[in-house]
Image 1 (cartoon, helix red, strand yellow):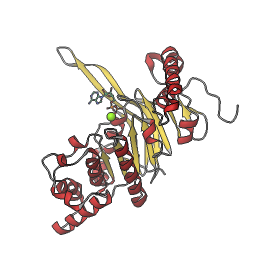
Image 2: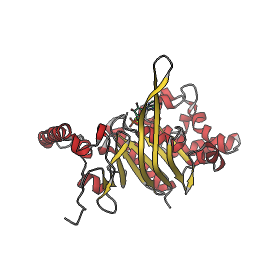
Image 3: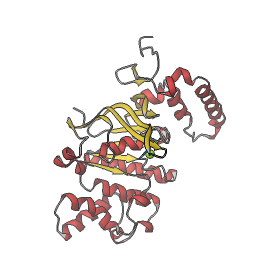
Image 4: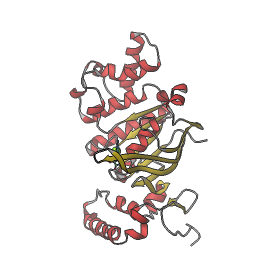
Length: 316
Ligand SMILES: Nc1ncnc2c1ncn2[C@@H]1O[C@H](COP(=O)(O)OP(=O)(O)O)[C@@H](O)[C@H]1O
Ligand SMILES: [Mg+2]
């Protein structure tokens, strides 16, 4: 059994308008997605801004109301708040946000910020708590003195480390990392990703790693889903997605990864223009009515793509 199973999840927001403030339409932020996260693995969720990634992540931690479908945690449906409370779900599943400055309370000291989730679930003495906070700061490579400071006294990369320390404070089984490094410089990104990996190995945590950038998740995730317009256009292993992309939207995200090798830049640019042209001219081949992403078809035991017709991998 997977740690998390998402079954036909839909999250629709009503759009109200007019004098009577009636519901006139719906935003289909998430519109029928299915995937599993195994214990200890990092699952990637990738798509452009507005594709429904954060809504999915927030629904998994219980911050977003589910319109329909199921989220199973160790086989148990946690879509209602009472079940989540009963099984102490909020201790097991935590979230890290992109914007560390607004997600860390500016008026609280780092020590209190990190201790907060512990206080909700454990009764520690002041000394025990201090010890635990020190331990957590140490895990993310921050000095113990950080405890008495405020969020604004740190750089973006350091704040993201503090966000991770807070997220792992309760010994969670799953951490939803919503664009955890998107606001950071490239060199700092690598540092944060490295210690996230280290923590994962040490504590056996699963991550749902959300990003708009396929370059960032490449070395983090074994399995991933590419999301567009609230649905999945492609699911696969790292190899399926990076070596054998099938959907034009996946190809487009791949062509957007900057190449470190300057001599390839001209070729990359041509490739990007070609993919962009295909995306605009042949959209109807890849999408259904109203631009809806088609249902996924299976290509191989691990690889699924939202196309009208597919030829099975290996059989052609
Ligand atoms: N509370 C809300 N009310 C109405 N629409 C929302 C709300 N939250 C998000 N949306 C819309 O849902 C879609 C998906 O948003 P989001 O999950 O934040 O995307 P992403 O994280 O991939 O950028 C967007 O079109 C967004 O405008
Ligand atoms: Mg988002």
